Length: 476
Image 1 (cartoon, one colour):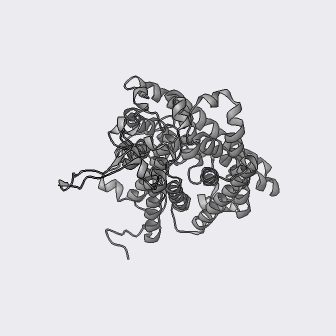
Image 2 (cartoon, helix red, strand yellow):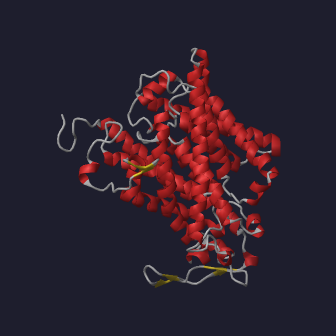
Image 3 (tube, one colour):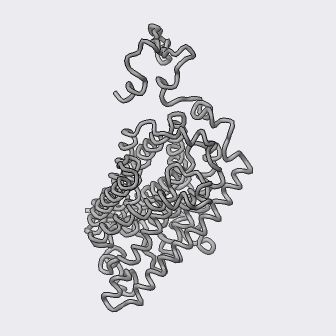
């Protein structure tokens, strides 16, 4: 029975799952992407890359509660922009959310971690050369002027694309396409790394990178499984389709890698995982399992081709530095996912997800042709293309304006600090053992324990007498 803390309109099972799903999405970012970014770059940029993700998560959550949530899901202010307002009042937060049998506080947190991971994905294209102070300004500005507008247009019941009937199950447009387009645009304005920096951009720990990638992959159960805002059959289908598509994409990418270069790579497996997860996101709970496999094959082949072949043939892409290939894994793949959703969306599953009886909405083209409603299928595909065009054009313009505005305050990059990396940027280094070699080729231990202010016994290891190299000791 309901009480004041558990009102009758609240479903405890749904609320518990939604909080768990939100936490899983949060774990995709911290520690997931923090670990992945920090491990995939050269050791001199490990702290900076991981810190960009860590800071972005904190900044977004604060801004989200302060004004951005209600800009995304509140009242319309002007055109397709929501009205800013705080989501901090007890009366507002403990009331029922605009969707689901959940309190608004749960919805604010769930949507907040989605917003946070979007900014962190953008950061993946800026690793190794963006001024950290510029990034600290960029994050709240992009959240406010870009993310909220896209979320309001596509996910809010008051949004113009939502009213048109666009299908975006869990963020193919709002998160991945937006992040991919903003990432390549911001990378253009920040500029590329020095050639010597590109040459030395080797992963400092690929095993740890796989651990970060695994957190991202498993966390996607909450990412897509939380889409229905309920513990129901659609959530179960969404989770299964998510992992089937990701697995298919990984295998496909590795096969192409093997035929192209003669060997499968861990970096390729991670990229294939990401493209599979991104592609299925707008369609996770509204397509059949066979469609998830087909989408996995497409997401493991088309982005592979654009990254491996097309990228090197287009002059503009060659001049833009995108170390984590965010453009290919999110912009290209997000576009593919949106289009394939317009083809494979099952009308019955869409009605279960959206809770509408309208056969003329949410009909994939292939099912429209099969059911004699080709017009409805073509209309759905056109709406998907409208959403893609809107997200791309809007993000190119807004991201460019934000970068130019930030550049007027602080430099987008600080070339003088590039050589120093983490030490110059933060006064810290990620791997003291491999970075503290003195001029005599010796490695000395720390002589003073700063926490307890005790003296350690000094010792040194002569380079010539070492039986194990630094890289070998790291592997052990």
